[in-house]
Image 1 (cartoon, helix red, strand yellow):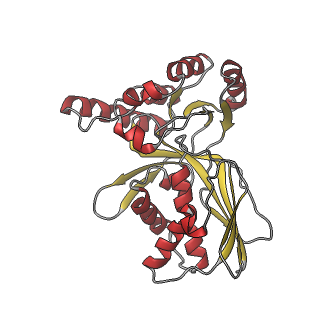
Image 2: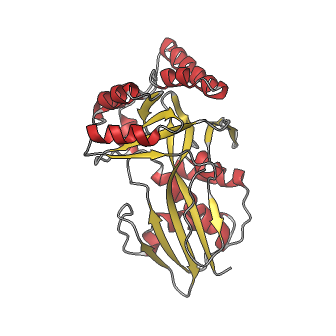
Image 3: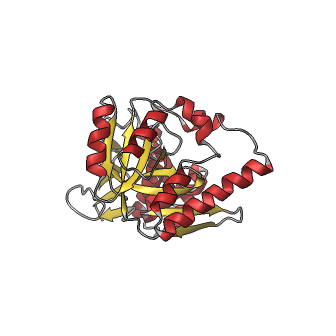
Length: 307
């Protein structure tokens, strides 16, 4: 094996009240084209990727090295060409995508034959929680729970008959900053109400009642009320998207991007109309990616598109 390509989707976590538990894979991608050679080299082909002066400082290399060491392996040197459609610090799982890229890089280079569940467990250790990692690895819409016993439980939602519209401002928000906005604890009453809203949203998605799911998305009590004031045009995006037919609009992950769930086939139209209102935004109609992490052994880089 001298050449292969790793393709990893973006993700959006929380989906409103599914805080640190719910996540979907999206049709924007991070890709690594890997060729074995005598020395390590990382080459970036995207403005979304940060400058790194030395391969040992590269986030993906660091994750790969950690996984290789768990299994008592040494990474063989490679040239890694990296391309990305995932902007940093916008709530689109850029960190989780890079972590999983590193895990899979080690898996391929060291012939570890990791299962999907092992990859999820490793990603959760490196990331801290599985809400972005699970959809990136499996594709689709997943609910996860880290119950503290060393295993990650997950549930794959049935395929959703809808599109999504993504609103990306020219404004970064670190996960740490977003977390610091949240209260340290909730009263029993508020926690019970918030949990009920989350349960209702998941049940509505499973049953295909997207109108109910959309209403529940927008009633979150866990994080959106505390983060909304730092999200540009938060109220305007929600109101205008609803007028155009969106089921629900929420903060994507920790922000600063937002995401709408819209009727199937209407993503392009709604995105175009929202773009006219918010020309300063990168507004993209996307699909839910159902492939997840992909590896191709080929001569040229491949980019997957969601069906």
